[in-house]
Image (cartoon, rainbow, N blue to C red; front, top):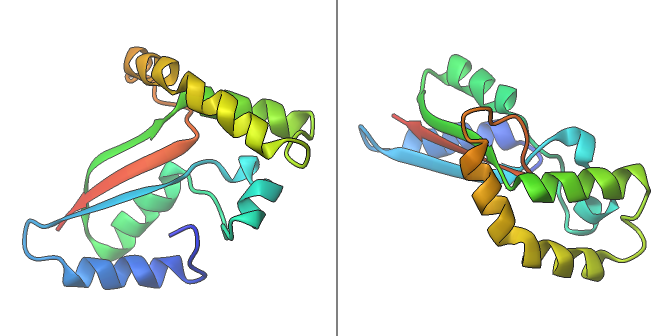
Length: 128
């Protein structure tokens, strides 16, 4: 979705294709405030927040069965990178560091699951 200009229409088209009780699983980059030159390089139009998916639910009458942020370490790394303007300097180095921290992030995501306020990514599962 982050690569599509008219993402709401695309979501609606996907919803129309779902059979009764079908699931639509969406994983997107989270938090527009973290949008960076890296996002631009990989053709992301935007990043998403939970409110975007609640709005779609309300407009198109579809049920959310799961919505959560994940990868809290990735969120922290992106926040630091954005604050210190590292995004243009060493993207490859940052990705290598982040890849090594994924197990820690998965562990912390489980601990903080109840709070679920931050994450580099967002998953939303709709059910028709």
